[in-house]
Amino acid sequence: MPDAAETADLFSRAPVIPVLTIEDHESAVPLARALCDGGLPVLEVTLRTRAALAAIAAIAVEVPECIVGAGTVVRHVDAAFAIDAGAKFLVSPGTDSVLAETFTEIEIPVLPGCATVSEAMVLSDLGFDILKFFPAEASGGAAWLNAVAAPLPHIRFCPTGGIDQANAGDYLALPNVIAVGGSWVVPRDALAARDFARIRKLAQEAASLRG
Ligand code: 3PG
Image (cartoon, rainbow, N blue to C red; front, side, top):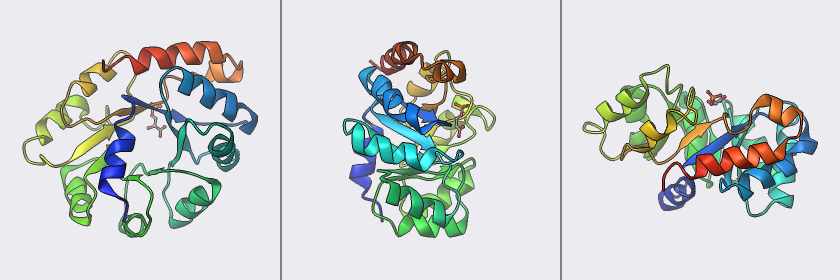
């Protein structure tokens, strides 16, 4: 079972966790350095590209100041491959019963995904009290999080999905939001052009969201 204190410490390190979809593993290391230099050391690499595992491995070895994890973990095998590649944490968009069981069997921090109060209650019963809320904007956004704070006082969330520099502050102002996730700090065109200076600047702006 992941350690609760370690999980809380990890997701408290920065207000924003960049969600990275990396097509070319050679851009992984300079990308991670730019984000880390900009003040965002906790990075989620989605397992949605062929380059994802190689990207995680490269960042884990070459950018030790970053904490790299794997996102879009949906099957037991995803978790196993990601951990083998060097992922330091796992994130799922939602959590079925098989994946929930997988998560209770591993030792590294996990952010299991949920989108409803019932899903959050099931995960909390299993021992997870920091959850990904996904897709955040489409599922009720900051208003949903504000509304569940009273009935679910022990759960904190990392909302992700539809969040950007303009609305992230609304989420981060909520006491039950530990951090937000989002892809906006790495615009597709900036990554394609290897414009790491622009990405570092976006990371700096995101890192300053919660003073
Ligand atoms: C994802 O898995 O793609 C994340 O939820 C990112 O969502 P975003 O692109 O809306 O930030």
